[in-house]
Image: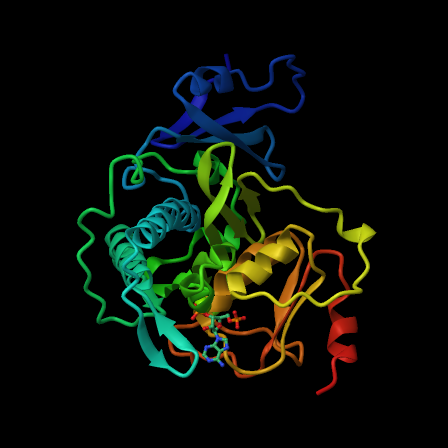
Length: 346
Ligand SMILES: Nc1ncnc2c1ncn2[C@@H]1O[C@H](COP(=O)(O)O)[C@@H](OP(=O)(O)O)[C@H]1O
Ligand SMILES: [Mg+2]
């Protein structure tokens, strides 16, 4: 047995001598995994005997009990929330009453946009009361969600429990909730939704810290595989990414020889993530910060890039202007972003 020198609710510390060679270096892992926990082993090479720590998270814990880093709790909650918002979008479509409102030129809003936003904002606010939440539909949304939620669509367990166990770089461990901005597009691709092009619809939740996307969730309410409705993908640049049912094409085997014209900012990002397109080009102002924050986080987490048409990154602080004035160029992993920047005429 290695004696434990310090014990916290989610962290055990012990000293481990480098000189001793042990066949079972960290026996405590076996004990911990029986508690339905995931473990992360932390070594510090600066001290001798070697300082070791085991950080463990009980994956059965509710989010409010979880001691996982804020960034991971935010992304985990955004995944579960987007998934439920997707079920709201499906139910509104099934009801046949879309309640379309014209907000301006090329700017429609439906009951699904309003209900999904209300649910997302309410839930994220409840979990993260100090964070700033900016939703496409503004702050005056008040819809009755009765009949749109059911126990089956609002599971209490996280959609991706592994998120809460990921290792977070030091600089992202100390972020505080009041410096977080959550950008919400409850239903991206509204115009397509009203035309029945439901494959172009996504629900987007982007998480920004210090003006940059640090986490994002793209949910496709109408994707269906293995009898499961909806597909959720998340990305945490510098930490990791994940997706349900992805069938990625090998990017390197494709050559850009075609132009696809499809709707939705989230949907276009999904085509890059799946390897079905090289670049997403939107060479004019129009899409907004809630359209790009989550897609940027997911794309960057897999090695893609998203900038304006001059190659400048967008900022996502709470006081930025909502329109992406410089247009949008996003490229898939392995694609030469600068080639597109050079090749697209001003
Ligand atoms: N000229 C414009 N005016 C207003 N919104 C625009 C726009 N061009 C793009 N957008 C918004 O950007 C998102 C992606 O657009 P597109 O499908 O054309 O690429 C859509 O979001 P929403 O569907 O969430 O409103 C769309 O409304
Ligand atoms: Mg949108």
